[in-house]
Image (cartoon, rainbow, N blue to C red):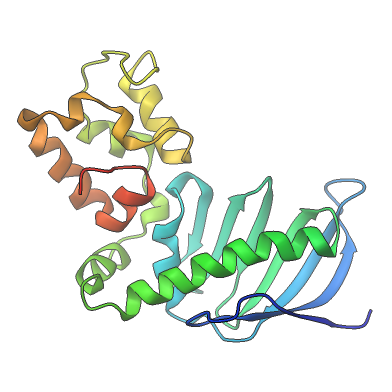
Length: 205
């Protein structure tokens, strides 16, 4: 097929254009396609920063190769350091461009975070661990563990699963907002970093 280039963003700090290189039938889902795309800039170190933009339950990060796979919008989107992107379970090229536009905005946000001296310490802290390996038990261990059900879940463990997948914001845990539970908030900050706390819906900053 003929390559298709799109000017998606006008003033992106890192990426602005995307080229659709190939479209093929999606083996896993009948009636949908796999799309191969190329961004106009390599992603390099920004991929590790991008990990903090999405809930850990939606992220698979291969640290050695700097390859990030996102499970979002009902599909898998894989980003490579070269700027190559693959996307499955896609309706058509228009659908692909709509989704990749949101991803490109997140890429530029992650790049801005890297460039910002105010965020550099947090970024390095998150990069020093593989945040995609954080599990619900890690979240649970930092919660007040009251099983109060004020968040809408029957247990704090059930809430931890929802937080990790991005299906429920962290600030729904009302006991966590009480001044006597600051130790638990600090536990989460140490585990996640402030950027990921914000990503997971903590509004206490």
